Length: 559
Image (tube, rainbow, N blue to C red; front, side, top):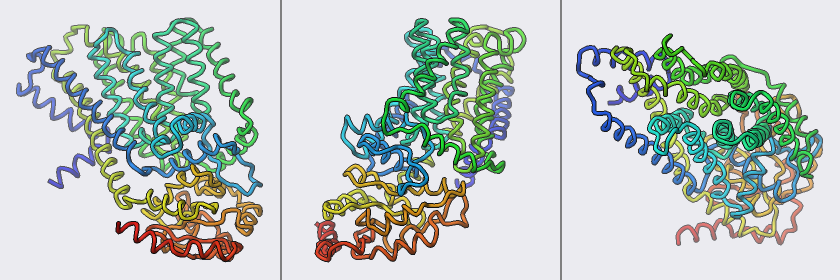
């Protein structure tokens, strides 16, 4: 049994090999007469497809609901996005300068923080409300894609294409569910697609402009993902419509920097410039290239099936070719340390939309090609590759997230208990250790939601260190002066001691910073998961007030 599982995992990681294996098996079954697809009842096939698609959609929603209700995060970026979203809403600057004591800014544009901050404000700050924007965006992207593709109220082809989109989301693991810009980005792309093909002229121009500008303010390079959308807009309403949308997108992009007092365009530019020094690594392209092949597979198969009679790409050729610069750009960015295949996720809705447009005339054509086993084998192999790649990746990802969160089931309660016991002190979360101990620090937003300051974020410090920008003296002074009165440190670990995932041989925080911290703070208490380090300048009475924490926490846990 293990050998079979290992085979499935291996095939799910190699698009070309998987397609070849499934094509060969399907061709043999068809050639031998064991499979006779042309003899199947069309009504039965339609009902079976609807049932299968419904199962995929329900599973997608079930995973989303499950993650929304879990008291924890599945990715290292989620804590900083959630924390900065609430900080921005609370009046703190989003992008700091490199000479400030604070070092918490990251490369994402303001859209992700403004959007998540809005939901935190409406629903109240919590781990649940921090995840809501991403959840709604992921679901809406599917609804919009279906609406853009459908020709009638119940369109089976549009439904199947949307279900395959879910499988492609799953092929990137758990990423579509995470609190980061990517789910918002696929929503914006899907909104642009829908507006370009369904809305009236000026509403389409306005919607595409807003979606494009919003996306550029998620990640600066995101305008390339809208090239197919602009092609659709220009083909339907003329080139001027696309130009007007680009002008509007520029205004939308500039708006947060122009009107929000805590969003500095100059500081954001400095952070982008800092990231440019990270360089590219060709060895990081293996996984992104394989995913790009997975994206291209349906387009190639459908084009070959269409052949000369229908035209390989037909009227959609410019739409297909507009995907090329987006793919090239995404692959280039994926070679940057810390990036990966996530930069290809925004291409999923567009690719599936193009595939849906290409396949519709092929389905209705009645060409003699459907009498060939190779045609049916291609379709079967394509479906099985998508199902295997998405299904295996998502199953393993959900199991991993469940296991990770299950390692510390009452972590959120522990953090809340510490905040209740020391409500009169400012506190921060210090990273330390690896694996589950590092993941225990991902609940930092709980501290921020209670009004505690953010002085340092490990991703921000790591990004600047990679570019050769050290911590400023003001940061050392903030530690020495006790700007944060108490730090939560993963239990039995040295505060701020963790290796960089950019350079595994280098620590994120330099040794002299760690030593400075240990000179200024003393370990006084510990909870179930954290050591509590108090600033040495606190009055003795305040130290004593916290000495019963361990006993009280143990007693509370026993009850």
